[in-house]
Image (cartoon, rainbow, N blue to C red; front, side):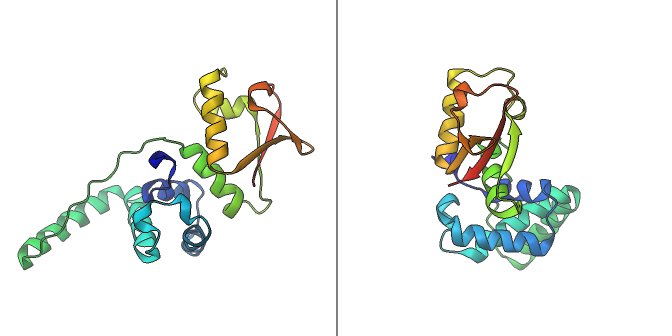
Length: 176
């Protein structure tokens, strides 16, 4: 369950990958904290400021890793000089745990103006790192779609079952 929740680092990656400007991502983070609060980590659910600041910190880390590292070193030296004990936080290694579906939900609800995403099923499999579907993969996709309240249909809003969709079929994803 914990792997399904948005982390600041993953949100920073999504913001970075979608080339959002400052005002756009602040608006996105406020909307996520307000409307998708149940999808963010529990420690941020009652503290929008900490949530936004942690995501912004990770954006700087992703965008300027060299400058970020030297700045962290300078901050640690200053803290030692003034006798301030700073709690060190280790940067997370990027893990693609449900990241694809997290980004899919955010793109549908907050980034895409048309409120849906179209993908050929074969491309979806490729994006997930697979060439063929297996029962385990279908179960994983269905679990993610269920958790993130995403509906998969074929063109024309025809309901579809992921385990029966053809590789060349275009699947339309919408949030429920």
